[in-house]
Amino acid sequence: MSWKFLNKKTFSEERILCVIDKPVITEKSTLGAQNNQYTFRVAMDANKLEIKVAVEKMFDVKVEKVNTLVSKGKTKRFRGFAGKRNDWKKAVVSLAQGQSIDVGTGV
Image 1 (cartoon, one colour):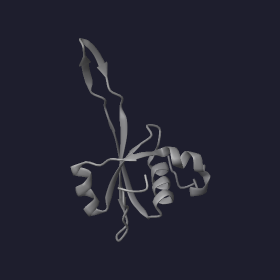
Image 2 (cartoon, rainbow, N blue to C red):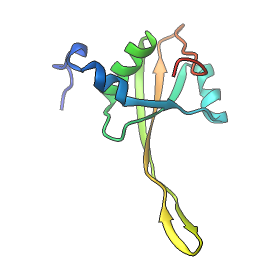
Image 3 (cartoon, rainbow, N blue to C red):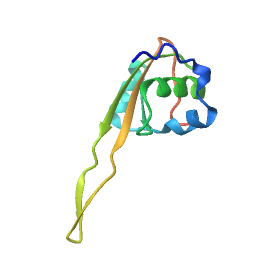
């Protein structure tokens, strides 16, 4: 399916704010920031185009590429009962050369 027919203005402001949950601050994601790649925890139903539009509008940057993956929740035991953590979706956003995001503030 082609997303070329969608305009960036077709997304509501409410949806844009709901797409990005929070930045992922780990050692690996911090090293990715040196290569203009930033990692965010996003809504499970968000697609790559929605993530791209949300990051561009929230941080006023130019997004080159978006990679997504779903982290499956671990099965854990607590007092003999089995439980499962929730699944969550992660997006690695590559920015254009010379662009940057300060993920420590603003989110």
